[in-house]
Length: 113
Length: 117
Image (cartoon, rainbow over all chains, first blue to last red):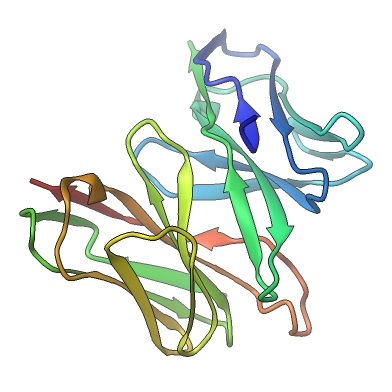
């Protein structure tokens, strides 16, 4: 089983639509969870952290289900500027005192006018 | 505020040539530093990380090496490049977890796109 698994998409949605991405992770000892956004040929940028209670940032809502080892990202009222690849990221503390990120391959979103 | 720089932005090198990519961080002290590679159609792969000057941990055995000669400088090197070394190389930093601000969020530099021919 892959460590972090995502539906690669692409998801093609019209402006204003609501779209949801899912992600599963294999290591039950994982401690931190993130969604990053990566535009074409650019570096990943942190979109939001994912907390156990779920969290919302404007049009974006992230949920974590530790029992099912499942993370989700919901985007409401999609904008053209939301078009990007969304990376699910799971962070585990290493023995050397640093943290190691394990990345999913990403889900590509295209918002269509 | 913290910033992270990488250079060069783009590089085309022949097989068998050496490589040196540089990464520097400003605005923070004693960061954890990371080198990742993103090959076409694949996820990010952690290559090396460093928790301090001269301290390098390797995640994937290969013909690449890393060094940290200064607190905020991280260098990725190779003596002889392979075709399979082509990819998007990303440097990232995070706050030292032993510091006052404990966070494990990582922030990425703009990357170097390497093509080996």
